[in-house]
Length: 111
Length: 112
Figure 1 (cartoon, each protein chain N blue to C red):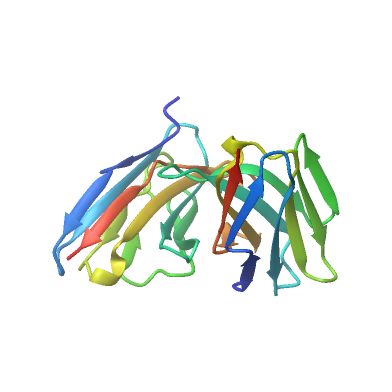
Figure 2 (figure 1 turned 90 degrees about the vertical axis):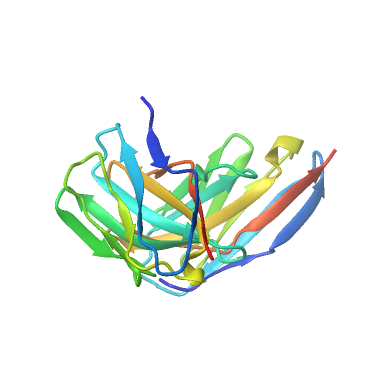
């Protein structure tokens, strides 16, 4: 899928609050949905991913939910900490190394 | 392991010049990719390779060539640089499709 919309573009939360970032896609054949975190001046790093046969996946304070019917997936960060401040990218793909990335969400956690 | 390495870190070119961005990985990964990152546009796939001798185009391949003669190396060539190619370029590798991609540190390219 070539159309991945990511919202919001910027997000500020108080430390300890939750943050939610949402992505929508258009290709019903998409079956892989990773989330990458990129700190300022650094390379993107995978934080969590989910496949189309799973509706939710959790890893400590981070969770991803997938609604294939509605074609959207979301990243949830609970108990946010200042070190969670970064740009987060969603992505989706159907195979053969073709991943389409969202435009990113700049998350700021205010101490 | 060094992981994914890229050279150079910074480069300034004049319009029309050519150059090669180097990418190497020592993890024996079959899959390698090149992305460009522009402000407000996320990461866009330029070219990718699923193994030595095999390459294919991504989302924005025009103006770029690649080759994959070995598993370790995946250079990206700009034949005639244009200002529109000013960007940060990331190389990435993975064991397969649909698993974690490991990114290199990036090359910041400016074309004047």
